[in-house]
Image (cartoon, rainbow, N blue to C red):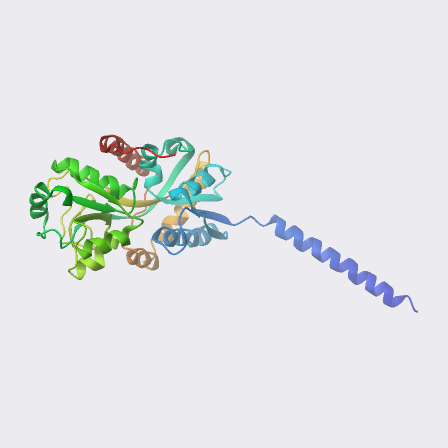
Length: 326
């Protein structure tokens, strides 16, 4: 009679151990979350797009999907992380075009090959860069700005978010096209260049349209041209550089990449899930708030776009005299 409690306790312990084992087995059998790696800190446009992609994957793939921010080296650490990941579709990269089209000419010791180490899955969103002038320039349109530049001397300068960025070399390409030397002034982000532009200490700046939009609407600066193949819907009254006879076409875009050797069937499922997510009204609204347009694509289209931009940037970077860094 005295043994029954001990037997009951023993059975309970055995059952608890068995249950724990079943739970552990079930957890072990569950797939790890899919990861969308971002090379920039939370809160910015790239991070916001990555979270939208993760939500689309979670819905379309019926898998947990998370965003991992791997900051550093201008986004290169995130690219290297995805390069080293297993090619099973579980680890993806969301990045702007710079690491895939411009960085090969900006960094000497790039530890990845954009063409060999990755498969473009889909473009997610696109937009434009803006050429913006401030009150230092006594003009409000490109013709007057170009005329002023010709005699501006050392005031013929433009700012960018940093040396080696796409806006830096958009400015170089513009300067080459109009035949007027311009001094590049690198800043730590577009916000700082916009402050100097609006304050009248800087003549011009190149940035994403969204960085100049509010100041443009307030009349403190003037966007004189955008860089896309067609006019931006956010400043529809502003011509493109191409319209003005200046052969500089550089759209802003963001895309998803997978490690090389990821199976085509896996890529197809991932692409379909992302495209379905981007097609929702909620996604379009969220992307519009970032000053971008939804622009899904297939892999061939994205490869063509990358090749075109790489061919464009190589001579521009060389002609600029820019010294590649490590």
